[in-house]
Length: 311
Image 1 (tube, rainbow, N blue to C red):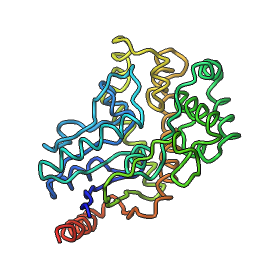
Image 2: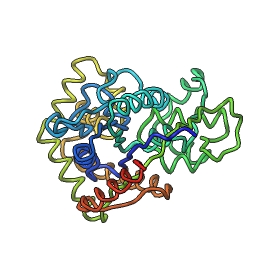
Image 3: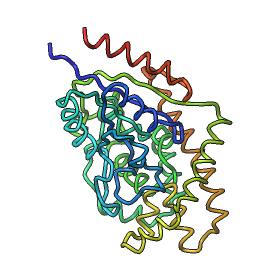
């Protein structure tokens, strides 16, 4: 029997401290970190996405950050093509692969927990959907696939259109247990045995952390970063497609909202996004959940897991 590759997976909602924990565990257990974030994969989207800095990496090698230019589109298909090669490389260097990120669909697709629909682009349908407003697209998805609507970012027009495209082809966005034509799915079942670690906190604490993190990014120059990106050729339309912070920044730079309105709306939208992330992960009963301050307990569990792995 082929021995399964052990992979440590650190998940949780935004602002929970995933990146810092992944670095700490990598330093303690000789690991390297693989980012599973659908926006940190883009070059130049640094402050707005809360991308880990070189200083915060503390010498730990990180992968799948800054992979593509922001006007390009990086998908879950791209992630599951690249990540296994990265895992193999890390393991080949005798190190522990640690996946950390908030894009649950990427991680689940990589580990074979969800199916990726192999539905080709329907340009005619996309052109029709592109003419519709984002709230209307979200209502359409809720009517046609409520389950997917509960997990999607409701302001992300690109993802809403893709979800509706899949629904139009397959009837719904499939998951691992769905009985659909296998030709329409790309379901990976890699030879990986993961240990799932989840970070979460009480709602009041999470709200304070989200607000504090947002204000810190504003002070670091999140608006100036968006201005530079636009001057370098990133369209407002593409910025809005990137969702959350960049959607709000695009509206600010176009004069559609004030700075104060942007902060208030972003604070609200990020809190909602965090709740959706938690709802998504709570379905995975393999995740061991901890408060961010339970570092010693987390380390002990990882240590025992690795000791068991060695026997």
